[in-house]
Length: 185
Image (cartoon, rainbow, N blue to C red; front, side):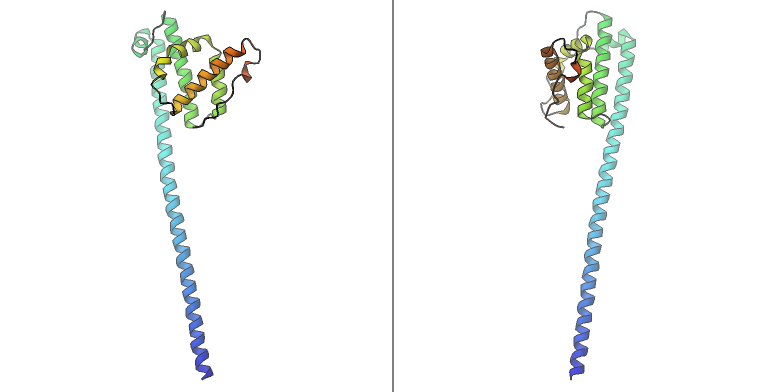
């Protein structure tokens, strides 16, 4: 009788061990499946982001090509310009200032420039009288931007830099003027 009980007992232990092993394997497979699905989802999101970035690059290239043509041809510049200038030279300067600003903003958007680098680049642009004239004449264009939009925040960064540079006066250390805004992307 003792032998029969130990055989039943051994089979019970073997079944329990087998069940535990099977449960562990199934748990491992389920975890692996979840991880696989997460990696697949991340891969799809990465491909979407890469596609968007490539589209932004193509769009920027097209925009800069159009600006370049407008800068070179006053008749085309008249079509692109929505602000009044007193001479073809000023119009070309406005268009070029727009190209510089757009390129800086684009670099930030696609991640080749950090927020701090964009701030520094915009500080340099804000020292230019021609850029300041462009910025002032395009103020009505920026009025329609949403406050929470990326371009709205960057526009406020430029406004703040202009204010800080004006308040600093003729300082020889202009490159340290202006605090980086705390609002983020």
